Structure formats: C-alpha cells, structure tokens
Image 1 (cartoon, helix red, strand yellow):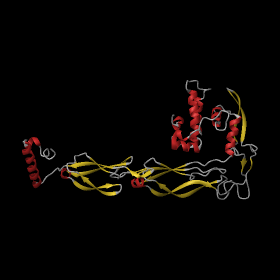
Image 2 (cartoon, rainbow, N blue to C red):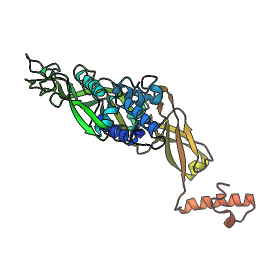
Image 3 (tube, helix red, strand yellow):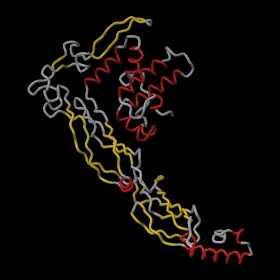
Image 4 (cartoon, helix red, strand yellow):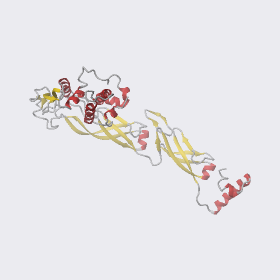
Length: 376
C-alpha cells in the first residue's frame, strides 16, 4: 500500500489547507470522467482514500503512529450513498467547473455548524545526548488556542448570543446556478457571511473578537523517556488548539532533536567511541579510564591488543525505548600510537630487544625491522 502522504504529494507535517489543495488538484487530474488513461480510476480511488484518512485528525493520528494497520475498518472507502464522508470529492470535481451538487454541500454545511476538533500543534525540542539516553522531565512553553474564558467559547459578548444569519436564513449555505460544458449545475457553498454556521454574532466578545478562542502562552512539563533519538515524536494529548463550538482539543506533538556528543557516537542502542593507547600498552596490556554515558569507566587493554581491535563494555549502551532495563553495549575501537622520536636510552633498549628477536629468529636486523620483532 502506497504511503498516503506520497499519494497526495505532501509532507508529513502538511496542514489541512495544504492537504485539501493537493487533493483537489489530483482529483481533477485523475477523475475518470476527465482522465481516460488506464489506471486513472484506481489512482482516483487511492487519492480519495488517502484524503479521507488524512483529513480527519483522529484517523490521521492513528495512521501516523501505526500506518495502514492502525486504521482497521474505520478508514475504508465510503459508501457512495453516504455523501457526508465523500463530500469534498464531488465538491472538488464540480467546483473546478464553477458548479456543485446539493447533497455534498448540505453535508459540508452541517459539519461546519457542528463541533469542530482543534488543530494539532508541533513543537520542536532540542535535548542533550545524555537526556536522550536516560530520559528527563522537561518544561516547555507553547502558544496555543484555548476556549475564551470571557464568553465560554460562544464568541458573543456577555448577556448576548448569536442570531440567525440574514444572508442564508440560517441554512449556512447559499446556492448559485451555473452553466458548464457538462450542463447546468447548482453550486452549493458555505455562506460567506456566517462561514457556514448559519448564525452571526451581532455583539462579539471583546476578549476574543467573536472567535470564541484566545491564544495563550502555557507552560507544560513533559516526560522524555529513556532511549529516545532524533526524530522521536512525543504526543501530549489535548494540548493542541482548542476545538470550536464544543469540539475536542487537538494534540501537541513534540519532535525531538538530539545534540551530538564530542566523544561518543550512537548507533541504535549501542554506543561507539575510540581510544588511543601507546605501543607499550598495546603490547604489555594495561587498564585505562574511558568516557561512557555513565561517566568514567575502567577498560582493560589485553596484552597483545592489535590496532583497530574493538573492545566491548557490556550493558553500557543506550536503554531500549519502552524497556529501559535492557541496554545496548559500548564498543570501543583501539588506536595504537607509535612514537615519532626516541631518546638515546629508549632507542638502545628497543635495539636490544630488536636484536634479541632477530637472533632468535635468525634474521638480519635490517630485514626484520625495528618493530617487526616487537609484533612478530
């Protein structure tokens, strides 16, 4: 099944207006009455299904989290007799020619007059490497729409209320007959005066300007679980914009970006780093201190460790998201540093050692090399 966002040619954070514009353009392009190419009708149905899912905040949220599997039977193609869910499809096609159909317009008007869910909001948050590994509670400040406290969301000044719209007579829609190459059609559109609500506010609330909503600044404390990474999205229910006319509030989605660490690199639940030892530590072995997500830890360098070897600190990686008891490992690549200059005493000792290995192996010193015997 193709990705619904790809089908509509929009990004995953596209707003409702962007979705609708793209859907209308594609619906006109692939409508079977216009496009006779093979496969156009199937494409038209796929576009309709994608828009049906993504235009509804609840089904969109399930799709974003679980994909097609999260929709179950709730987001199938609607019955052609049920024009409510499919209204925009016909409105899109016929509005392209200046006309419309009565049924869909009536359903759309009814939806506008009823409760409307608030928009979801996005908040981008940057956290440190350590906060991503172990989690933390963070305080953020957002701006969102809340129900106006002065008018309780009605939009009318205290002591007054909405009245029936004189333009549409309270129907919430106006009609206009239009001739097109396909015949005469009656265009049904939302009333421009009341915007489809069927009511107007003669004396609007001064606090919200008659909108019933106010933009406020709010502080929230959110829990960042252990094991998150860049791109992780946290959902804070009901902290998006407030709904209109008693509709539910949208959700707040916090998108995380994790800062890099100067020494450590993350790969899933494992941590990678490098450490440099001198050639004597590599040959003889040693115990050194290395930086980990838990702070300094002791690392044993076995005798005879080769350059490029990878040593493991088990259980010192990143906690698994959703199961913080399970942790990955810390993998440390060993780099061996050879000296570029030697003092006289060091050189004499190394030459003695090189000579010992040469005599033992019956090789000429110049053929074996100074460090050939050391690592031979």
